Length: 447
Image 1 (cartoon, rainbow, N blue to C red):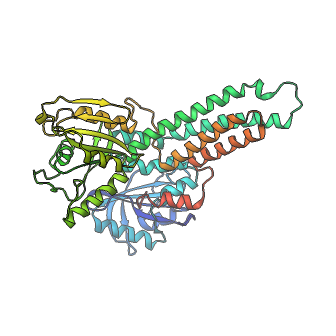
Image 2 (image 1 turned 90 degrees about the horizontal axis):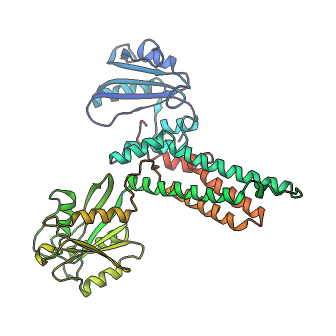
């Protein structure tokens, strides 16, 4: 991705027809560009009605122009926004005119990358831009907005400040070992270190919650044929998504549905019934079922409440990977004459419900949230990505290991330095070009 300040342009609104469409241009010294396109330079940060002119002075469209001179713009460069009628042909004509005037087509995320390179956003805030656009729930949108406004970055910077203060004390001890009063003892280094470790763990816990809002929980419905997997999917989704019949093997391929429980996104997958079969198509569906189980966060293993857990069910359970949360769901309690209930044992969790009547579904929803580690009422979460979680986990590990070296101050200082490097990677204070390319390439064009 080019990092120069040459003018770039892109359609910033979604594809298709709309009442309004926006073409955005960013670069250095856009005043001549605006004069050629609009006939004059709009007053900074004022919406001005203007005709957008082609190379012969004829109007391409009649709309609104906004000019943001550097450095008070989104990218930190001169920015020109052209708000016209949102037809695809009009937008393409306007974009073509911008390219004729010397702009090049912006790459995905290039506007936001320039904002990062010009210190308008740090890396965590830049990533929050994409997260806000892609938010699937109200909770995720609010969480992403908090990160975009710098709350996550401020929390990371506070952790870095605490690390720096503690490192300064260590360095003072190393530089002046002959002092009668040990600076580490004088400044309560052990207390500071304990508070630092707690603060990193708190930030990590909030980030895990925010990551759940971003990525959702992967839930797979598995079990033998005719135990009610498709009925349960339909009940969770609130609509008839999967075909339900009494014929074994009706579901031969995975059926996916995104649902929300208290603002938490869940990706629920209904799978083919697990059994021995000679049907080639059904066998392919069963193979896909095991593939889905391998990628799951939670596997709901459905059994018929009238029959209970059979030997075949236990054999299926044994094949589920150990790191996956497993819950036995005893379905069809309406036929078994049973009541909805949740039973927790040391080795397993069992939930009794009826997908047909809805009895026990509240217990299932609560159990799914619990499996995700979701805590109700959390309003200060951070919209974290996997790389943020990795950095926080490693920072926590280095900070904890530092506590093992209070008697060996060089090692203590080194662990603190490594923890700080991990935290700095979150906001992009130290970021490799290949990491930046990977992050911004996933943005939409025009942002």
